[in-house]
Image (tube, rainbow, N blue to C red; front, top):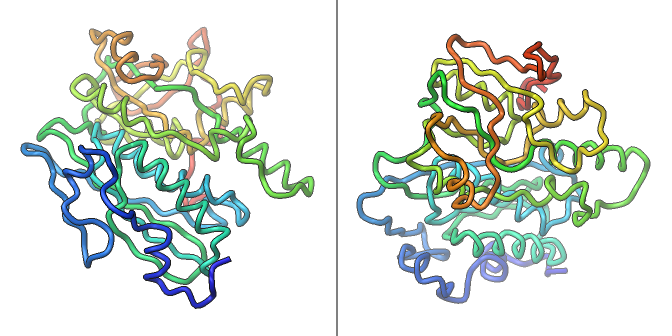
Length: 331
């Protein structure tokens, strides 16, 4: 355990300040000045626009008090990087604002290792932030770049576009349900390596998919609040409706054997999957895009005229989707 007198600046130097260049020539060339000054200096590539997003995770709202810290560091960064993926952007750098009740090595070391490991894997160097004493929370701001005029947005979907998702859905919600049941039975701290909670504890931002789909998709969003909720954002921004074909929705293996109502609730209303939801024109071939993206692409419906979002079965009959997604102030 770190000394109780560990200062804010000692904490930053010990856990979050790299000893020197990362060894990644691309990332290092874009970071003129990183952690340790009043602000960072970044050098975007010529002809690019800056993409900025921020997310905050709060103990008791987004994660359990005994959430494994390495997983939490990873997940806090993954959630923000997923926003860059949805814009078709590549990372330039990240900022971390961390609040902890006390400077404990047993918590800070694995948290920083989980955070920095994903930062290295995604070429998203930590370039600054803030640390304070307080209830545990982590705010992550990501800075990215995209060629001017090429960002994926929410407002470009058109009637007749195919409704496409990456990967599989419902795994994080299924993991949360399993973890909640386990806790109700009086079990101890969670095992973040268990297959049933993999998507909950170790989400993967689809950065490669965002880059591959740039220039092909008319619109995109990441699935953080649930398929129907996030689809609603695209439809509202684009002025269209959508039809979701339930039999075509790819289910995470964690839902194998689940009853139909639970599967629909997790896949359509569960959050934290961090897959991408896209509007792709009918003429775009999926196979080469999926290969470039490194993840399966599934057609699950179509964007339509009007403003209604319908979920239908194999015969076209409407289905009850259960809850439509997550809302911090409505739940």
